[in-house]
Each structure stands twice: as structure tokens, then as C-alpha cells.
Length: 314
Length: 276
Ligand SMILES: Nc1ncnc2c1ncn2[C@@H]1O[C@H](COP(=O)(O)OP(=O)(O)OP(=O)(O)O)[C@@H](O)[C@H]1O
Ligand SMILES: [Mg+2]
Image (cartoon, rainbow over all chains, first blue to last red; front, side, top):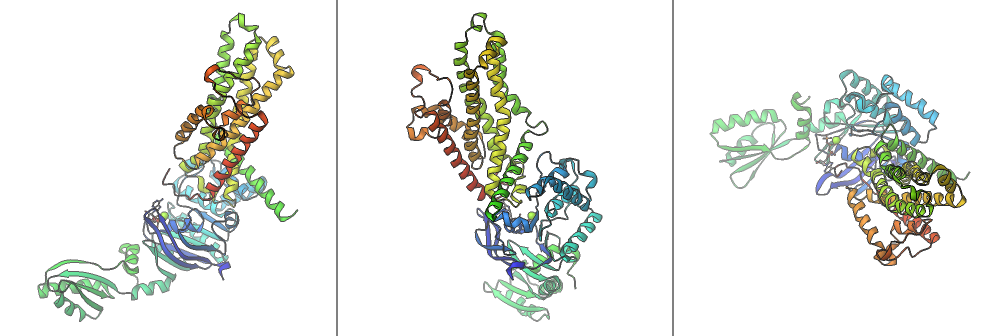
């Protein structure tokens, strides 16, 4: 099974004291997978680990059975479009791809042929002789994609590949990804915008604070999120009274007292209504509330963050 | 062919591709201009000498050989070749890290050790391409100062040609040796001037150090293969304790060890681009 799966087993990576990712357990099948999480959640770290640019402090990673520490084997199978927008000095679109293909063992003639067909594929045929340094952001994104695709890899790792592309460009590139995934390849696409991958991905991995918070088919993940209660910590003068009142609410599943009579943790399935109800109870009972805050950083909180103000889909 | 041979051929081809890419990166499209100007400094000095040489000395060829040997050793080898190699070889990896382009090499189906060896030979190619012509010009202009007939006549005797060959060999070996050490330094130090300065200090002190440490001095080994023996009076405590053959061998062994260590280091390198 591992010969056609990307597997992370208890993988951790620290940058000195700073957490990169922690105890990642993943298994990614062929198809289009979205890797979603806010800035700094560990998406790029995860991808750099997959491609051997970083080495895990703990755990093991296998890409279709290949150890990322063996580039000679790995990069016959894997193509990686990184987050960095830098290029070898003086490179033109053409020389950049030709050099890449030479490193992949192509003859100079074949390398030129393949480079120019790849440039056509990403819509850069008119810019092949120009220096990449003078490309626009979208063009740089396209040449990076061409670089990761030019040796026809079975596994594509793409770090925010839609950044810098205009809507038409996005649509084109997304179409390319779905076509590649339909051919049975692994296409892993990261983004900090959920709905960007949510529509095209077969499955999603949601990551936050260096941890995987949800994983699976997009529909399952969404259901898991909707069903999961959120917890709110409320500090107030008469916590015991408040706990009794909120527990009577239909959507509250738990109300737990902390610190004697001064705080209560409430778990609810319906955050929007909970805050309305809370406001009503507080005024009715003349409670003095000191603070209201989320009691855990769970998948729901991440999800709410990721979809921004679009509201929770039903 | 056996699969082992195929693998070896593949890796040799990869070394060539990486090396040629590196040479183009260094010398292509006017990027090598500053380096070439630097390598031509001793030539400019030789031209100046040729123009100002008093007539009384134009016929004195015995002094020319010694003078050339001194200029070559002190200026060409220990300054020009030294700093040109520091620039080229430290930059080899460090430059790719600073320009954030190293990951493109690391994303190729090439072992890191093979990449390291390819990068080393690339930098060596750039060094030889600029420094061998510079040494040749330096020697030719030195002789030409004595008139085309007398000077060139001497150059084209077997003695003159063997001297020139020795200078070219010393230049090439200096690139091999200094190159290997700076290549290694480039994988450990952020600022190339620190190891370059430290090693220069070590080389100045090397004649006063125990033989075991002197093995690490490239200059000591090079001195043993100069065609004219240098002697600088009382300050010049000890010459090279080794004969030319042993010196060359030791220099190559030290270089190979440095490259092997650099290759090992490259294999353990992570790309974060945060430490410049
Ligand atoms: N080179 C580095 N040195 C130190 N810490 C780092 C380094 N790179 C990443 N980190 C830290 O690791 C964590 C994960 O970062 P990472 O770049 O993987 O996140 P990301 O999900 O890709 O974010 P973004 O959406 O901004 O690209 C962050 O806390 C970040 O500060
Ligand atoms: Mg990132």
C-alpha cells in the first residue's frame, strides 16, 4: 500500500526552539489533495520535509515508498513548486527549464524540445527568451510550475501555486491540476484559503499550529467540523447561576465550573446563537461578565478563520 | 554495461552538467568581468615593469628568473590566486544560498555529494579559465621586457618552457588546493572573509609550525614545485620540508579530504534561507 501513498509517521520538525510541525500522521492517496491552514501553520514546512529540503527531527516520511533523503530516486517521481520566488541569476524561461531537464538526464536536443513544449503548456511561449527576473508575479508562478512539471512526475507538491495569478490564470491552472490528478497522480496543493481548494480537491488536510486538525474527503471534514462543539470560557461574578441558565439552552452540550464560582466553560454546537442567548441571559440576570473567550483552538476555530466572513456553510 | 557502470556514467554526466552550469553562472554574460580585471593585476604590473626597466637590466636575464619567481609566488599565488579562489569557491554554495537558488539544484535527481563535486569542478573551471591565462601573460611579458629576440628566445628554450609549465602547474594546483579549502569553508561560514583571513594568517605562520601542521599549508607545497628556489635570507626560516613529488601528493590528498568533507556537509544541508 505504501508504494502508492505518501506517508508521514509521527513527524516533528523544530527550527531551533520554534515549532515547525508536530507529530504529523498522514497518509495521502492519489488525486488532488488540498493542504489548508493559516499563515505560519506549517504548510511549507511539511512540503519541504516531503522533498528532503528539511530533515525531520523525529518520525519517518515515505513518498510512494521513497525516502526523501534520497534525491536521486525521489526526484524521478516528485516535482516541487516551492514558495520562493527567486531564480538563478540571468536565467531566461528557456535556459532555466533546459538546465533543469539536463539535470534530469535529458540530451541537449530533447531538453530544448521538452522545455519549449512545457513553456507552451503554461502559457509562456512568448516570454521564453526573456529574463525571469523581468517576469510578472503571475509569470514567475507559471515558470515555477513548469519547472516542477517538466520531468513528468507522478507526485506534484505545489506550495501556494495559485498565488499571484489572475482569475483566468487560476481557472487555467486549476484545470491543469485536475487533469493531472485525473491521470492518477498525487497532486498536493497548499493554500491558506479553504474555498480555493475546497471546490477542486478530492480531499483536504487541515493544519494549524503545526498539527493536522482534520483530514479526509472534503464533505466528511465539513461534517466533522459542523458537529464538533466549540468551547467558550466565561469569567463572571455568579458563574454558578450562569452555568445553570446556559445549560438549559438546547444547543449547549456542557457547562463546567472552574475556579469555584468565578468561571464556567461552555460547550455549544451553535456558536452564533449561543452568543445571542448569552447576551440575553447576562442582561436579564444582571450578571457582571469579565471576559468571554474561546477555550480551545480546535478545528472549528481554524475553519471559521479560514473561511473568513463567508459564514459556516450548511 | 553493468548497472554499476551505468550509474557511474550517469553521475559523471551529472557532474559535468552541474559544473558547466556553474561556469556559465560565474563567467557568463559579463558576470566574470570583475574577476578577470582582478586576475590581470599582475599582468598590468609586468607591463609597467617592462616599460620602466632600465637599459642596463634589459640584458640581464639571470635576475629576471628570480624576480619572476618572487612576483609569481608572492603576488600571483599568495594574493591573486588566493583571493580569486576565496571569491569563487566560497561563493559556490554560499552564493546560491544568498541568492536563494540552491533549492533548484537540490530538487534535481542528483545525489548531494555529486552536486558538491560538480560545483567544485565548476568553480575550478572558472578559476583555471581566468588564472591560467593570467599566469601565462605574466611570464611572457616578463620575458618580453628584454626584447622580443632575447626574451622570447629564452622563453622558447626547453628551460624557459619548463619554467612556464611549472608556473602553470603551480597556478592550477593552487586553484585545486585553495579551492578545496574555500569550498569547504563556504559550506560552514557565512562570511567568506573570516576563513580567508584566518587561513592567510596560518599560511604566514606555517614555516614556523610543526611539520604535521605544515601539511595543511597549500603555499608550502606550492613553493616546493617552483622552478626557481626562493630564498629570503634570515626571515625565511625553513623552506618546504617535502620534495616536489610528495608536496603535490600531499596537496592533492588534503584537497580530496576537504572536498569529501564538503560533500558530506552538503548531504546534511537543510534549506531554510533564514541564516543567509
Ligand atoms: N527558517 C525558519 N526559521 C525559523 N522558523 C521558521 C522558519 N521557517 C518557518 N518557521 C516557523 O515555522 C512555522 C511554520 O512555518 P511555515 O512556513 O511552514 O508555515 P506556512 O503554513 O507555510 O505559512 P505561510 O502561509 O505563511 O506560507 C511558523 O511558526 C514559522 O515561523
Ligand atoms: Mg508557506
